[in-house]
Image 1 (tube, each protein chain N blue to C red):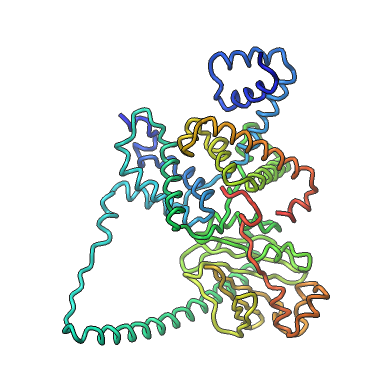
Image 2 (spheres, each protein chain N blue to C red):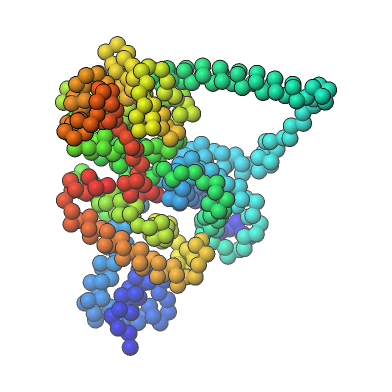
Amino acid sequence: MTNHDDYSIMIQLFIDDELKGQEREDLISHLKDCARCQEELEEAKSFSVRVRGARPQVEAPPALREKILSHMSNPAQQATSYPPIQKRYSVRPYWRPLAAAAMVLVTVAGVLSISYLRREARAESFVDAAVAEHRGAGDGRPLDVQSDSPDVVATWFAQRVSFPFRIPNAGVAADDRANYTLAGGRLVKFGGEPAALLEFRMPNNRISLLVSSDKLAAAAGGKVTRSAGLNFHAKDLGELHVATWDNKGLTYALISSVAMGGNNSCPTCHRERAAAAATLKRPHERFWHAQPLPEISANQVNHFSY
Amino acid sequence: MMFQKVGRNSENEGFGIEYLDSLYGYALMLTRNSVEAEDLVQETYVRALKAQHRLREDSNIKGWFFTILRNIRLNEIRKGKTGPHLVDVDGEEGGADLLPGHTRNSQEILIGKEDAEQVQVAIGRLSAEFREVILLREFEELSYQEIAVVLNCPAGTVMSRLGRARAKLRTLLAETSSQPLSYRKASR
């Protein structure tokens, strides 16, 4: 004889359309007379509806779709994309080691110089973009996502940018010492790619944080302060104060009219812990102590990762 | 003909392209990294295209794509080719608006969104094994047998794993519901 535990299992199988034949008939027949199982069926059904209703509407990036369709229309393309390169050496065999060493030195020097210049240029344009966005936001441009929840904002951006987006430190918005709150963010462009602009608000101020991949952006120049294993670059641009840093493949630019790193500037944004303040000696240490580290990603806050 | 099972979009667009969004979602769940997820999905289609002649007439194309994707991922993990798991993403609207029903006012929509968000957070707190089986069953609506093929395990294992995953999810949601909103937000 079937007991109620068996019926509980059968009810879930029934909802999943996995119950067939006689067992299905038995359950349907039993349900007509059993209020307890009817209730269980309704509860299980509504739970299933609730879970399915939480299905995130994930869309594959259009570029990925195009790539796949392009591959389908011409599958041989990939196989012929990487032709083997045959090199011919014109130097005599005994000169080859010296020539190779010289070539390596010249190449390394050239690459380093070019790399340095490119990095400087990337850093400059990233700061310019962050400042422009900060000023643009001041003109009342609306936010694409409005929330004071770091994980809501992080998950919103994670689906829209092509780099592994992370908000630096959930504590930025949730820290009980913070005098500012996360307002939300806006999807912007940097280097032709989507980038994330976060906005934080204080009673009489705004703070913007531009986030992009370090393949497109870089942190360089300014006064460098090392903290928690990261180099922070701080400088002033007119009335605005800028701090940039690289971390784990991302580059961040923090823009605010709030002075950063100066004497007694910390309390503007953070209520200090007495113990922490006592152990930190220099003003910039106090500032960087309150900086947004470590980072937050949705999996760190156990947000659903679909 | 095997292509009869592929679906209506295949004639116009491409082989199995109608599963792209689902596969991308699954890849995001497995990799937690949008860049890796894109690579994984692309590689899945490349392999599927090469192997489509092996499909039988009664093959379930969707499950087959999911199986290929998962196998590629497992091979990557074995070879140590995977990067750090950094990104979690979810949907824009939370899916609550897709519930069957009627026109809802903004208050109801807000409540629905919050509930969907709660469920997503709770699913995110499940183990990877439970999360995966919930996604395949509840979101992708694969049958137990199809899930068994994807996960390379018996259908009985799928059933018991799904039962345990749902029980855990219920517990997590009950815990969440009993907490005040401010605490729930702070604890995420």
